[in-house]
Image 1 (cartoon, rainbow over the protein chains, first blue to last red):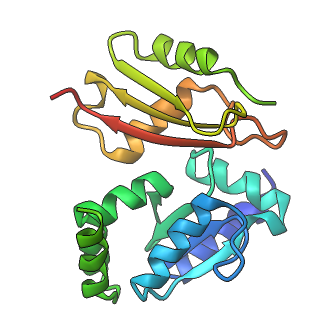
Image 2 (cartoon, each protein chain N blue to C red):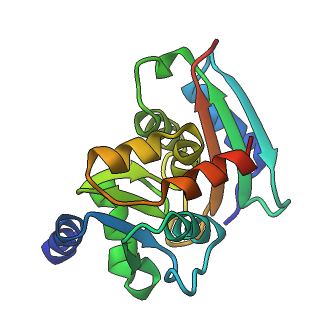
Image 3 (cartoon, chains in turn yellow, purple):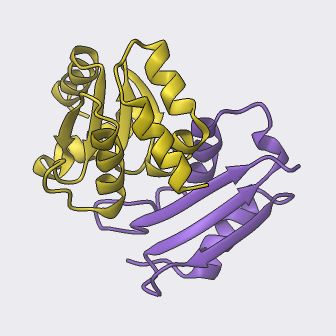
Length: 121
Length: 80
């Protein structure tokens, strides 16, 4: 993998507390899984950077090597890979995502998080 | 190219011979499945590590540039 993509990715996850590598953008998601994670982050009023991997084939493959994870979307918090759609969804429902954000000093709307859990209980 | 349900099940069974595996075809196109893997080897591993083990079993069939298995809704659990 060209060094530049690896550097580009590590720069993005270092410079931004929350980064979502996704297919499409938060306003025009192009995949159901990417769309769901972006919607959750937006609903929780998280400040995050969305990166459209479809815009750059090298990025689409490079991110999978970077995280040793074969699918998109991929969520990063404070430079750490958190998971894809399944894991983020489970973490929202279990409250682990709230905890992860709080531990990392990331502001989010906890009532919105509770509403998601109420709707899904 | 899509993957047949039994091929997906075989891949998972060979990687988790003692695990309990269930695969559901979500769209009938060989590209959208839901799978649940319950295996003792997940004990002590976090979700990312558990799912990485499952993806490793799929040996690169996931979301490749030529669009193999596009979507796998994955659940991993430790046996109760």
